Length: 249
Image 1 (cartoon, rainbow, N blue to C red):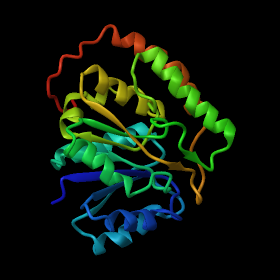
Image 2: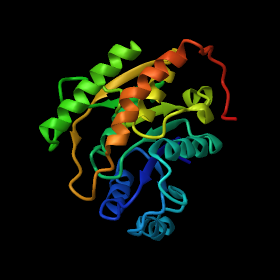
Image 3: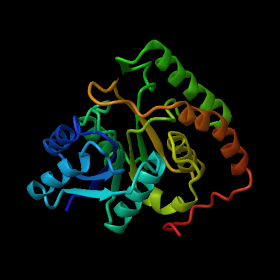
């Protein structure tokens, strides 16, 4: 059994899902994949289920009743990973904005270099984003600076969705108490990991905007990130971050 699980949330990713699964399984390192599909009307889940018999010990799917939010998808995936005793748990998009080959670099940052969270960072060494409109690049970049200022974290890409957690991090965080369900979920998870004193490393990557399918970004997601982070910071003053390994309630 692989020690690593790649969690891929999907909604209408029929153009990408078979290719991303194949690309991950072609890597030298063995990664298992868990697809979490939010009842995609385009048949994404059906494609995954057709692939499972070809990879019965490596490819799995959780189907949900509808669009319940990115954060809740990852929480469901984290619980699955802990239940099945994976040591390294990855978040990754289905649309090839994250290069599958970089999974091995994130794995090495944790398994070899001893970090507890490895972040595939667009901004660790400049701005490494391809095919995004300049306006979106600026929003994302300055949002990361905003998060650094508000939270005090020295993480240049706090909104990154390409990461590797060691199991002990997810066992420590009370997953059922995570507040955000949109892209601010990414910030909250990194902030909580940092507050617990876990070792974090940013691994420079090149982020490439999707070629197929549609972006899931919305104004509501941005609003949650902007205003929610202040609330998150305030709440942190009233919490204890004593590291005790707990699984979710």
